Amino acid sequence: MIRVVVDSLTKRRLPEAELDALVRRVLGVPLAAHVELTEGMFNTAYRLTAADGRETVLKVAPPPDVPLLTYERDLMRTEALAFELMAAHGLPVPQVLLHEDGLLLMTALLGEPWSSARARLTDAEHAALRRELGVVVRDLHRITGDVFGYVQGPNGATWREAFTAMVDAALADADRFGVELPDVRPAFEARAHLLDEVAEPVLVHFDLWEANIFLAGGPDGQYRIEGIIDPERAMFGDPLAEIATVALFADLDDDFKAGYGVTAFSEAELTRIALYRAYLCLVMIVEGVPRGYTGEEHEAHVRFFREKLVEYLGG
Image (cartoon, rainbow, N blue to C red; front, side):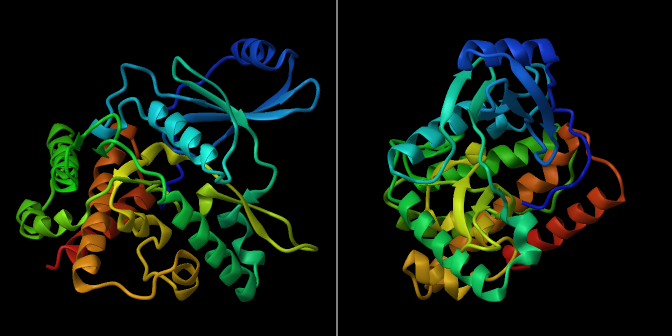
């Protein structure tokens, strides 16, 4: 996901005494050091070092009185569930140590985000990692659920019902926060019948860009995917929705396709992918208002999302 480097009104910070008490309770030793991780834009996150050297990451949900988008309510429950399901299926994710009262404590990954390492990767290394990611996502999409859409809502009995509710919620959020949008509802409605091709709700991470994928190895050894983080946007639905962030505002590359096991998409599938990208644009346009984003960089990103929204909906 494209990030705007500003603070967010959703951040809830904890005093050192609370962090120490949490580490003592879960790990049985005092807190030795802590640092706030500033890359994320929704939850507050800390890297905690215990007195015995163990490192964990703590995510803190927003304060209860902060306005949120409809789907953002109780996101941490979704993230914990996604981690649990992914771990049970052998996918590379941190181990959840605690989930309670808007807190999620997990083991820390030791590598670095793909986005940070990207400039040092050769084309061959990047291609190999894209193929590996394709395999990981293929295995992720073997996880199924009991509901279409977000666990915390909106959701529905069918993918068409759930996705329509998701779009409606995003448009309602835009009205609630005073964000003017073009009349996109007819474009979504005209293509909604294509969603009926999706018969099974599979787990979709829906924020699987390079900043949420950690790499280990290199430069003396081969790079590999160490772990996937931040499945807080996760939903159950069409596996093609994953392409919206796996190939962020770009064509899907052949290396990922080879790992995932697909060669091409039908016209109907390409249209569905465009719908999911358009939905992502809606979220990105609206979310900046309740989070308090301002400045030229944010405004430039919003203009970009608006242009892409029109492009994906064909006009």
